[in-house]
Length: 162
Image (spheres, rainbow, N blue to C red):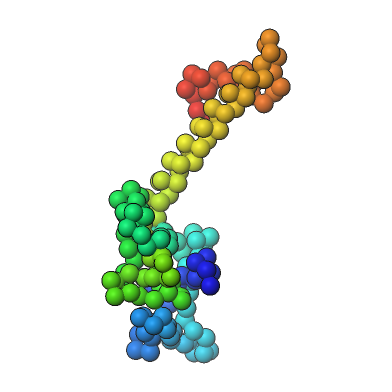
């Protein structure tokens, strides 16, 4: 099994049978509905009506890597009190969800989206500067190959966001 195959269960909508489940061994039993089907709901990031409060991420359990994620990106460890249950992972004695050499961390979804938008803006700006360089390289005595118009170049150099 690999980290991408681990299903994350939303415990706010699922019914975990705590008496028959064992966190340390990674054995989870869910209560059943009237039809005999387990009441177990996976986290689905594509359904906007059921977005979780946090973005969860597996991080290598190495001090330098954890420090980068905690202090640089604002992540914290997922604990038993959080409504997330990674199927197949075990709960360690230190209070962290573990899978092989990785631990489960979380960040508020709003913080994650803000950071993601910032990185997209930076990438777009770098892409535009590459277009300007390509334009400058393709200009020969006022002729250009059409990758970037003169107006776009002037707007970019004047600071107007395209």
